[in-house]
Amino acid sequence: MPADTRWFSLDDIEKAAQNTLTKEHADFFAGAAGDESTLRSNRDAFERIRLRPRVLRDVSSRSTGITLLGRHLDTPVIVSPTAFHRLAHPDGEIATARAVAAANTVMIVSMAATTRIEAIGEETERWLQLYLQPDGDFTTALVQRAEKAGYGALVVTVDSPVLGRRERDHRNGFHDLPAGLRCENMVDDAGTLRSIAMDASVTWESVDRLRAVTGLPVLLKGVLHPDDARRAVDHGVAGIVVSNHGGRQLDGTVATIDALPAIAEAVPDGFPLILDGGVRRGIDVVRALALGASAVGIGRPVLWGLAAGGQDGVSQVLDLLRTEVDEALALCGVSRPDHLDPDVIWTGPPTHRRVPKHPGGHP
Ligand SMILES: Cc1cc2nc3c(=O)[nH]c(=O)nc-3n(C[C@H](O)[C@H](O)[C@H](O)COP(=O)(O)O)c2cc1C
Ligand SMILES: CCCCCCC(=O)C(=O)O
Image 1: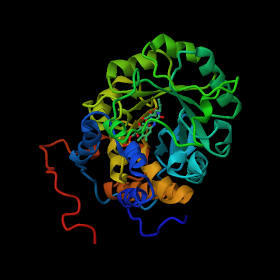
Image 2: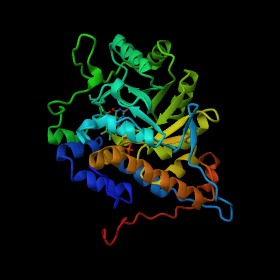
Image 3: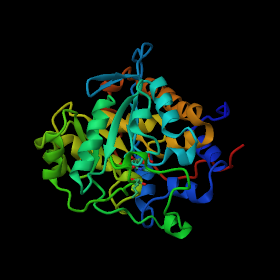
């Protein structure tokens, strides 16, 4: 399906996606845990942060490029891991990977992918997200497959000792993938499909054990406390994803953008910090980079792009955000992402009162 040239924002793409998804799948993608207060906070917290641009700086020559884990990317926006891309579009993770390669950024492939990791584009910079399984041999075998397939890093999700309680899924009775879809990377050597276990016994020693069996850099995803960030550095991890899982795990957590400054303070200068949760605009990217992130991740917008237009839809999501980042940098008087610092953030009394986005409705 060709992507629509009338999409001017991620909001437009979200609306288009709703027309292509069943209610239960749309709710699975959109939903979060409990009252979904963290889901809302992630957005509200971004909107509260006001920018303080500089003027009369020559910003005629600009770049949105960054370096992350030693690799040059054309945009500071990477793709966070999300489950079940083939629920959104038949081309699933393969389409996402192609769009990510075209944007020259990173795709973190979910352990709950509906495509085998080897089939997800070699031309794409791919990192593999893992839930550490109680059967360590299964995890190690998957890690070895990722190494062989050329994955660049492992991202261990650490905010999930149990699965968050997502009431929309319970109400809709959404517990299984439709016929023909499965978590392709959970098939073991004997050909048996395993369930993904959320292992409540995982500790820092589990991270050490993973590091001992792989040469790949290991990042932790789901850190919100600065003491955990310090500990991650002490345990030799290569980076942190500051994340509350898009509000899908513990409801009531701090918004990620509010958690970021203390974490940035806790880790050494230049330590890779990726923030995700509620990033929907180029100005959100600017806010996060100014407050110490090296890059940001997006989850749901990729699924909306995929549902609305397959590979083309994901490309539109990534292109829109890259364009918005470029414009936001220029308007802030900054020519490169790594020149952003907290000086661009307003620290005076609050100036923001929440008002409806489109008071008159969409034209
Ligand atoms: C439908 C869906 C599936 C997700 N699946 C995973 C997953 O398999 N592993 C994981 O670590 N995080 C998963 N996440 C969390 C995302 O990686 C990310 O933290 C979150 O979506 C960021 O928030 P955003 O959706 O507001 O951008 C998922 C999120 C959604 C919405
Ligand atoms: C037991 C199913 C595991 C899929 C989890 C995907 C995920 O993290 C999510 O937020 O959804």
